[in-house]
Length: 239
Image (cartoon, rainbow, N blue to C red; front, side):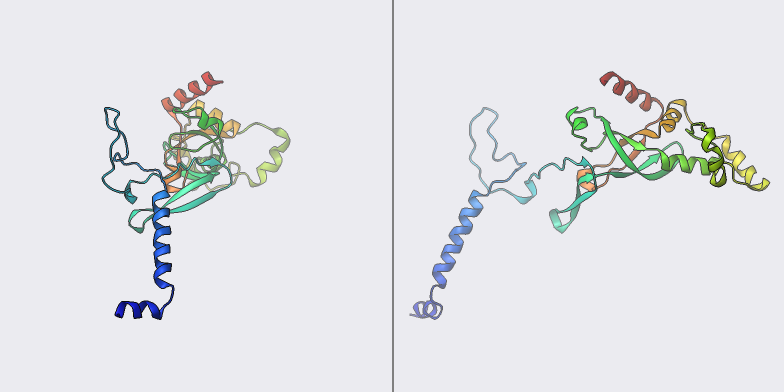
């Protein structure tokens, strides 16, 4: 009697709840997702295996970021424990380190030129870890010239020489005490020929060491020494 009276107070409630629960059941059963677990896979013999439990959130697989070269677009993704990670969909800038000089600068990524794993990533200009990219050399050239007071990758152009002299870092007047400091630095300011040639062109090769799909950044380092030689050969052989 109590039960009938309870339902009579709110007509249609029981029926509505039943419909909602049925709809939710259909939705949860029909909702398929990428899963990284092995419970749904076939046996090693090839036979089918009955799944003994439902899918788990911690075993899910998310779609790849496939970070492209373009105007910056980064999404935040909710992860296990209420934490979050950044998924870069497009990036155009990165923080690159010049290891031999112990300095890093933010610069523009111009192009993707080589990827050891897949040529398709080069064609589509996809930024992934260990991609070889071409970056703008200007921030590094400016730092080098102000730090050592030595020219780096400059083309001789007598027409514009007078205009440049007015605000040029190299021709700026300095006291003897200050110049003594710079002369000491210049003893260790040698740049290898292969890298200097790149500075002349205004573009230098760099390697991405971060994971753009996980941290939302495309940071890396400038290629030098034997690593630079290796990748220059690889790039030439592909052309």
